[in-house]
Length: 206
Image (cartoon, rainbow, N blue to C red; front, side, top):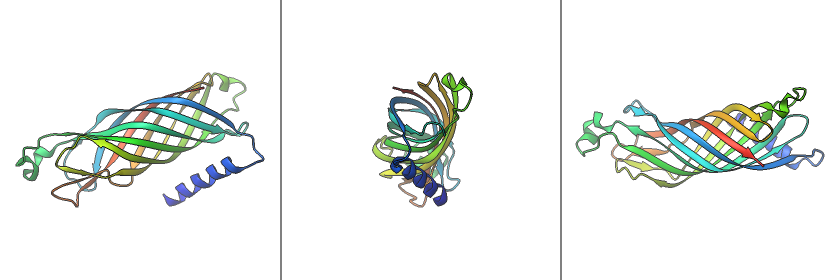
């Protein structure tokens, strides 16, 4: 994982600071649906997937002719899951059943992106996209379920693919793996959970 991050950082630095390459920069707006769940570090209790959302702005820097570039977004993101605490007396005795835990984040996903543009003009209508990179989140609110203690943020990685249509609309699908914990159980603090989620996103680039 560290090697992947070093490759991404090195590639981003090369693209940003190379004075010999002209880059095309665009900005846009992004909206997404997240299907998320909580992955506990041990088989603690079943957790159901729930639908959440993200909305924000996106910037893209692409190198003409080679198809490589970087992008980054600033998103308001809601994640979480539905946790079946009623299965265990330690929480059932306190009246917990199946709380829906919401986590509200300021999310910053960064991508090393490849857009296939050598399609004899077809790329003006539709162009395949592949991307991967790290995600940084800062917790700005949560549902305050007393059974949990929430971390101040989370670090994760993601990868995905999609299409750009008419050089304006980007439709992508991705999966995000949380690497640091998003919450811990208050009574049994050795149990922690990470966010895992699928994302379908639509960006309109200006």
